[in-house]
Structures are given as structure tokens and as C-alpha cells.
Amino acid sequence: MYCSNACKLRAKRLIAAQSPTVIVSNTESKRVTPSGAQNRRSEAESTPAKSDRRLGTTARTADMQVSGLHSSGEAGNSDIRAAKTDADDKVRTSSQDVRSRMPSDADTAARDGRLELREDLRMITTLDRLKDCGLAVLSGGVVPVIRNGRAGYAGVATCGSVHVCPCCSTSVRRVRQDELDQIGQFWECQSCGLVMMTLTMRHYDRQPLALLVEQQVTAWREGFGHNAGRAWRKAKVAYGIRGFVRAWEVTHGPNGWHVHYHVLLFLARPLGTDRVAALQHLAFEVWSAALGKVGAYLPVELSADGKPVGVKIDAPDRGESGKLARYLMKGQDGKTRWGVAAELTRLDVKQGKDGHRTPFEIARAAVLPDADPRDLALWREFEVVAPGMRSLYWSNGLRALLKDMGFELDDRQDGQVAAEEEAEGVRLAMIPAATWYRHIARHKGRALALLRAAEKLGVVGIRVLVESWGLVWGADVMEAEELPEPKPGDLLTAADVLRKRERAMVARRAEFWRHAFAQLDMEAEAEAFAETPDAPVNRRRKAATQEAEAVRRQALAAELETRTDTELGAARVEFLRRRREANVERTADRSAALDRIRDRDRERAVRESEPTEG
Picture 1 (cartoon, rainbow, N blue to C red):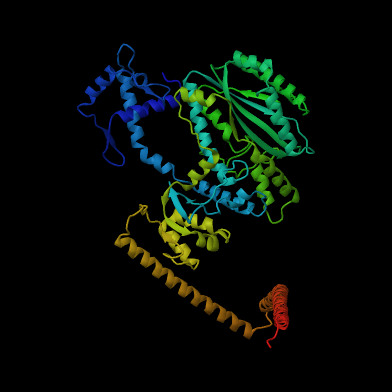
Picture 2 (picture 1 turned 180 degrees about the horizontal axis):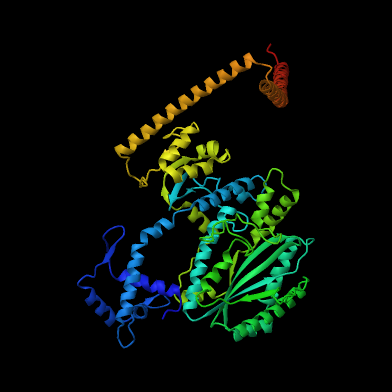
């Protein structure tokens, strides 16, 4: 017996990995067991069991579960045949699994919608990192890449924001959701329990989002966090709560912002229905008291039809823990319809119910040409508060506990996940930074068109598209060559020298023809202006030219005035310097002349005082 379908699939993978498979045709496969396989199996059984961190048990016990072996060594032949048949079916359908991972038309449409929304948000956002996301170049150029039929860009900045960026939100939520799914299945395989606790608040349209979030965060700290009271601390011991993962979500409806927490509680053992109801009532008492301390409106425990309102705890059925864990990283609210039902990858192209809208629905309304000013104000209010909130918060010690139990966690930050998910794949071309900024980033829709061309025709599609924009392949956009990095002291090879010369020659030719075509365009425009000077287009162009000329003349006059004042100041300083030097020279000459006069007078007086002979 298996604890869940996930455990059964893992065990089948272990059997498939222990014996090689020979593919006979596209539709048939035959498993060949080498002659030494039995000997190796007996040796493995004689050696100590090695821990398998992925299964949460030992490799030997997992093999016993799948093959039907008991601790005494008895085998069930029917179970062996069934397990091998399932493994053969899995090998036979491996090519179908690869094809199923290719993006569908709905996935592509959703991706296009996210890119277009991010491009439109650059015009209204106040966040610099959202403006640069997918646009700013990190190094010398941008590299289009493709993986599993999905194209992306490597070498561009990503903001990694789960709340305000539609593209990074999808990348991060997809990775986190898959990880939580595996964690839920793994925790259930250990005979432990999981429950989902949802905490909501009463709110009104007059309350700003910042106030609600502040009350929510403080109430969590007082009720369930570091300042939790004795009641919740005793409940953690009584119900075996080993830790939690908390997700923050928000929507907007007729009564204003609706902020709430989804908290996945990890329990030492599963809970029955009665104990779940008791824990829900206790959690409501704790949450209500905490909200009262922070000055928030007190929640309602049950609605008129008896459904929980303020605090709701859901317990999954056997084998459903993974799906419950995935719920934490859904598309911001559970009351939404997904654009793609296959993978639930948070496409952010969804509609809320009962008049509630998710933040990205508000963003799509705010970027419309005839947008309601209130939608723009709501989005800007959201993007001020949301970046400071964690999308996922792990309780202290839970990640260390999972690692000790053998589960390998993804320790990357959201920014790393978004950047790596975007940049992974096969390199198709290299777009220098100058070409990217001048011919792609400044033109709306060109970045998305380049991705579509790459997904349809690869390198050929990229080349045809950039050449239709007037760019030169080999100069403006180049092939993505996988060249080894030169080491210090290494000399260039002949191939490297020839490649550099060829690229330089292509660049010179492209520059020459670019100037020639620009000259022809200017001559054609001059002829059209001379033939129809009174045309509306030519009148507007003439007025713009005259205005630009007037601005240029004003700037030139101001520059000349500034330059004249500067020159007059310098001349005045030079004049004073030279006058001081002349005064010093005249003073020195006057002193020298007076000294000479005094010397002559002394010499005359001496001669007159001497007696004359005879």
C-alpha cells in the first residue's frame, strides 16, 4: 500500500532507474535486464540500506513497497508484473510528456498579455524597478533564448516583484507553487497533517490600504507571531503545530481593499473533523482579540448561513495535501477564474467575482486610454504598499526541519528565480545594447514580436524580422556564438582575427548604406515639400522647424552673452594684474633714479671737501 499517488509515482521512478530501457520504435519499448542485474540486486540487498532523501524513506523499503517484498523477503509476483507494466507504460509515453510541456495557444496568449501589460505599466508606474524590468540591459547586449518552445531574453534586468510585475509574478509563483506542491506531498508521506487557515478583516471603502496592512501585520504579531499569548502557545503544543507558511493577498471590491492571510499549518499528525472545528474556534478567538488590540474592526465568526467568515480552516483529504499547498501561491485570490486550466500558472488574466478585482485587473483598467482616474489612484496606492510585503513567509525553524527530514528546498530569492527563469534556454542571437535601446526598446511591441518570431522560426525568424526593420544582420544583430573566454596571455587564433575583420567590414558597409539611405530620404522629403508647401503635414513641419530654429537662436544668444560676460571678467582681471605689475616697475625705477641722484650728490660733496694743491 502507498500513502499517496505521489509516493507511488516516486517508487515507480526508482524501479525505472534501476534497469535500462531499449527503445524499439516510437510506439513500442522493451526492457532488457543485463545478466549481472540479479547479482547486483543481491549485493544491494546485502549492503546497508542507503537513505533516499527524495522519498522520505530508505531506498530498500521503497523497493520492497513497489516489488511486493516483505521484511521476510517474500515476493508477490503479481505486484512485480503490475509495477513493471506501469513502468513500461511510463517509458512509452515519455515522448508524449515532452510534447505536453510545449506551450499551448492559451499559454502563448497569456504570455503576450503579461508582456503588453508590463509595457503599458511603464507609462503610469512610479517604481523605477518596474520601469526597467525587461528593458534595461545588464551588460553589453541582449540574447534571445528559447526553452521548451518558449522564448525569452537573457541579459535584461528583472525586478522580481511578485505583487506589481505581471511577468516576474508568474515566474516566481510558478516555481514556488511547484515547490509547495512537493512539500505538501512529502509532508503527507511522513504521516503528518496539513491544514489551511484563512484570516480576514472587516473593512470599508474609506480605509486606505496602508492602514489596513499595518493593522493586519500588527494583529498577526500580537495573535500568532512573536508576541502571541498563552492560548496560542498552548494550542501549538496541543495540536502539534510544527511551523507554518504564510501568504499575503489583497483584492478590491465595493467595500474597499480586502487584505487577508492564507496560512499553511504543518502538524505533527492529521486532525479529525472535531479537532479542526475546535482549532478554528480557538484561532478566531485569538485573531479577534488581536484585531481589537490594534484598533481594527472586530470580525464575525459565522455568517447567517453558518459558514466561517473571520477565520476558516480547511483540512485536505488523503492525497490532497499537495493541492492544498499549491493554493498558497495562486493568482492572488481564490475567487478567480484562470486563463489556462491545465497548469494553474497564475496568468494574471482573470476576472474576480462579486465585484472584487485583483490588483492586476485594476492595472489593466488603469492603462486603458479612457481609464477611470480612480483606477489609476488605486493602482498607485497598491504599488506603494505591496512591495514591502512578503509574498511568502516561513516560520522560524520550518525550513531547517524539512531539510533535516530529507527535503531539498529552493533557497533562491524571488529576484534570482525571476532572472533565471527568464534567461534559461538555447541562445539564438545577440543584440548589442545600442541596437536594443534604439530600435527595439523605444518601439512598442517590437520586443514581443521578436519573441514570437523566435518561437515560430528560430534564428531565421529573428533575422527576417530585424531585417524588415532596416537592421543589418551581422552588424546590428549578430549570431549567438559560443566562443570560449580568452585567458590572460592567450593569443588570438586566425579564425578569431578573420571573424573580427569580417564583422568590422560588415559594420562599415552597413554604416555607409545607412547614411546613403538617410540622404535619399532627406532629398525625397525636400522635393515633396517644394511641390506641396501648403499641405497640412508640411505646414506643421515648417512651424516645428521655425520653432526649433527660434529655440536654437535663443540658446546661442544666451551662450554668447554668458561667454561675453566671462571674457569681460577675465579681461578686467588681466588689466588689474598688469596695472599692478606696472606700478611695481615704476616704483622700482623711481627708487633707482633717486638712488643715482643721491650717489652723485655724495660724490660731489666729497670732491668739494678735499683740499686743492698749491
